[in-house]
Length: 277
Ligand code: KIV
Image 1: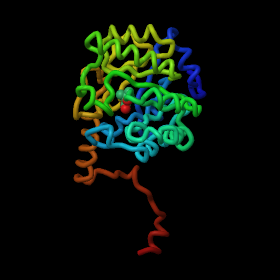
Image 2: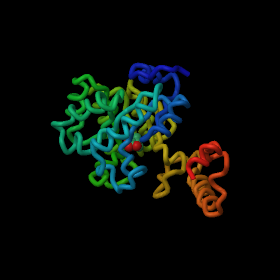
Image 3: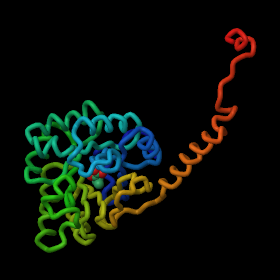
């Protein structure tokens, strides 16, 4: 496993050679663990809103929250390419502010790239950010920031017209200069077509096995988010009951006077103690 940070060029060169891995992280402890495993990319996702902050919608987080968490993730990592997810307000509500906000992810939070979701002005905004020298990952299919405008949290591209639109969006994003694209909740055959058509890596989430790589939201994979579980999530471990047990054990041991034990306590020499009392 290489020890230096993955570059955009290295990520792109993996297409067709081996599968690419990406996970989300939002804080120092989990980002450190993920980085140690050799995951290629870490996304500081705006899923922060749901899985960390307990909010209903990803549109409820802004630059302040995203930068705060992105800084913790880049501090923790040495190897993965860290991508800052641009929050809704930073480029969809304020397209004229998008370059400035993208640059904040790079300069202040030390991210290697930004991600933005498809929206009507997506291509113009993407081109401006790329012209400013910032690498962009696109995101098409189910775009949670605008879920209300695309029929809700549903699989996208299920009829021929919608599937063709997705293919066009993917090609347009590649032509605009994106280095990679996330395909979220897209039928596997359409994701396969898109993956084959693109020269850049397509990273799937709920988009089947044929994408160049896969991304999951880490708290879903670890069983740390219990509010809902999308069909595409595979829970590799269920940490919630383990954590609940550890916390209950702590509570019970404190109540029973068993914690802290001698080995968790500090001592003072007898002669010094005598001078105190
Ligand atoms: O915010 C996020 O976690 C994402 C992933 C689902 C790709 O955008």
